[in-house]
Structure formats: structure tokens, C-alpha cells
Image 1 (tube, rainbow, N blue to C red):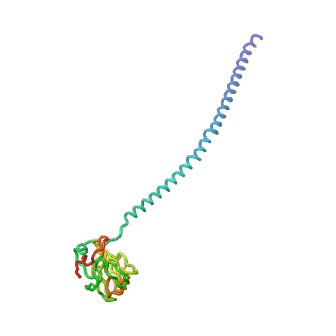
Image 2 (image 1 turned 60 degrees about the vertical axis):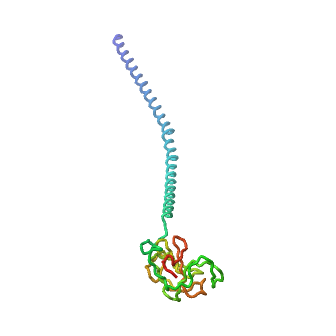
Image 3 (image 1 turned 30 degrees about the vertical axis):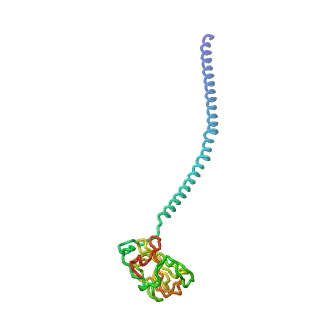
Length: 239
């Protein structure tokens, strides 16, 4: 009987040892699993979450603001460039030069009668109306009040104005840098920007205020490239 119990005791010890080892192993597994979970939580709280929040606040917001600022600056520069380009390419309209409207070379008609009552001079002469001496850089063509005033050649009307000394004035670009002023008109038949043809009526004669004491006439001035010239020389006419 005693001999039979010894193997049983050995088996119990072995079983007990196995059970203890299992318990110890299970305890180690639980212990290390718990530490791994805690580490993950700490890392997520301190590394992942905080990094994401900082990037969202600093990087995304600032980038958006910089982008909007850059776009605004670019738009402003484009507008400024467009404005500058527009200003530099804007030029005054002018009459195209042809064989029939080149000063000193082409044919011009008289704006009214051919009689000249006061010729062109750069010397000082008495102005009876104003009571002083001044140069007369124009030609006064004799004409009665209300008579028709005609364009001396084809041209582009630059302006229609009223001057205290010259009265109503029609300024026409006749090409070849020739600009003529028809002064002392009563009525005007053209407007700024109109094209006229040689001999076309542009209005009727009135009075030249600063020469009112003179015989009724058209006060006619011409410039070539901005310089005052004798209208009769331009038109190849003689007094």
C-alpha cells in the first residue's frame, strides 16, 4: 500500500508545479500587458494629440493668412501695372496725314473770303480794342457777320470752346501736325471728335471780342507741331 502511494505523490507534485508555473506565467502576461497599455496612453496624450493641435493652430492658420495677403498684394500690383500701362498707351487722337493734308505741300481752301484785313506778325502792333500793343500771330480774313466759315482741309475736330478774348473757337487737326483755330464764331455745326472734309461748313461768323473795333472778320490761327506759323505760308496763299 505504501509503495503504490509514492507514484501518486510524484504526480501531484508535478501537477502542482505545472499549475504554479501557469499561474506565474499568466501573472507575467497580465503585468506586461498592463504596462504596455499605460505606455500607449501616455504617448497618445503627450505626443500625438499635442502635436496635432499645435500644427493646426500655427501652421494651417498662418498659411491661410499669408496666402490671402499674397493674393491681395498680387491683385494690387496687377491693378497698378494695368493703370500704368493704360496711362502710357493713351495718346491724343490725330488726323491721319495724307498727300492732301501735308502743310506747305497740299491744297487748302480759304475759310471764308480771300481778303485779309490784318496779316500775321510777331512784332508789336496797336490793338485798338484793347488799347495796347501786342503781336498778331494770326490772319484776319474779311467776312460779314453770319457768313459761312469752312474747313480749310480734311480734319479732326479737337475741341469746341468759348474764350473771353477769341469768342467761340473751333480747333481742328488737319494732319501733318497742322492745327488750325477758327476764332470768333457765332454758331457751330461740329462737335469734338467729328471728322470734317475740305470746304465743309463748321459754323457761322460772329465777333472776336478782343478785336471788336476792327472790321468784321475771322481770326484764324495755325500751329505746326505746336509752333505758331503764318497761316498764309501753310496754305501757300498770299495777302
